[in-house]
Length: 68
Image (cartoon, rainbow, N blue to C red; front, side, top):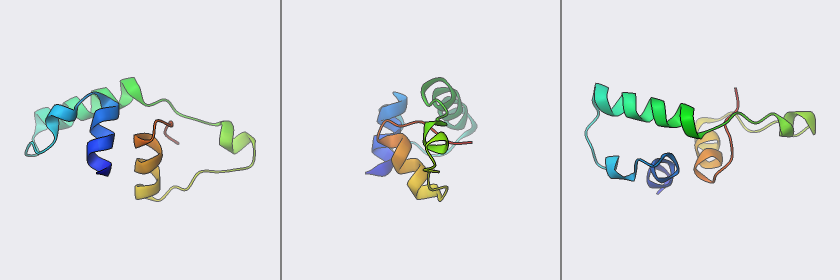
C-alpha cells in the first residue's frame, strides 16, 4: 500500500508492478525531485522528523515533504 501511495503522490501510479530498470529509476527520480519539497518547519519547532526509511516514505506518501 505504501508503494502505491508513493507512486500516486508522484503521479506515477502506472509504474506499479513494473520491473526495475534505468528508465523507471529515472522517472522516479525526476518525479520525486519535482513533487516532494523539503520541509524544515518541524525542525524550527523542535520536532525533528523520524529519519528511518519507512517513516520518511510514509510522510511523503501522506503528502508531506522530505527531509535532508
